[in-house]
Image 1 (spheres, rainbow, N blue to C red):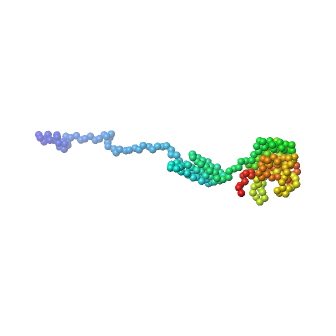
Image 2: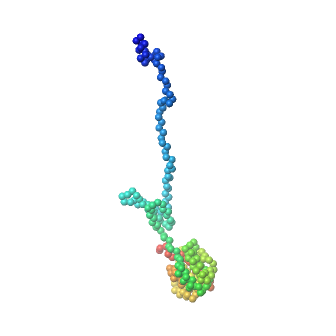
Image 3: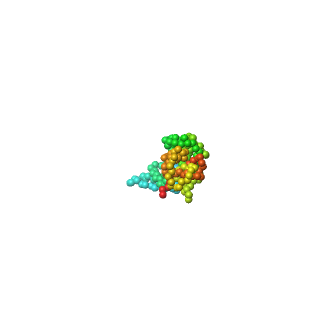
Length: 239
């Protein structure tokens, strides 16, 4: 009797006698599985590419740091005559080179004076300017238009010509030529305002006194005037 009671209360005895029901297998939802950590997706925002800085061959870039601060000011120094495109704030540009001279140009008062001075003496004129010289062309064109208003006849529109001094190098200023007795170099010339070339020379010399020349010569065409517009004297390189 005591053995039967012990069998009911001792687990090992109950299992051996078949009195203990086996434990049910765990359900699939209760199965133990290792935990997996899923990382948050990385931001898909585009990353701005690094800007490539290209340095102009005629420019040097300097950085001048401020006193006791982490900021700096970009300084662009150019050597040459080209342009610099600056991007950003705080840029300082110093251009080292030849600054273009202001172009020669007749004012309205000078144009009126020229037209008035030569209006009574119409004549044919040939106007030439230096090759590849836009500034000389614009001045030649302005003078030609004024002379046409005054009644002068253009042999042809202002014409580009290869003009150079003996031995090479550009010529500067302006020259008026007409048919007449050749004078030795350096001889003073009196501008006779009663002649077409005299009136023209007098007015142009007043407007452009720097390197103004006259050249009467027997080789010049009779009954006409030739005006040669050379390079701007203000653009002449320093000696």
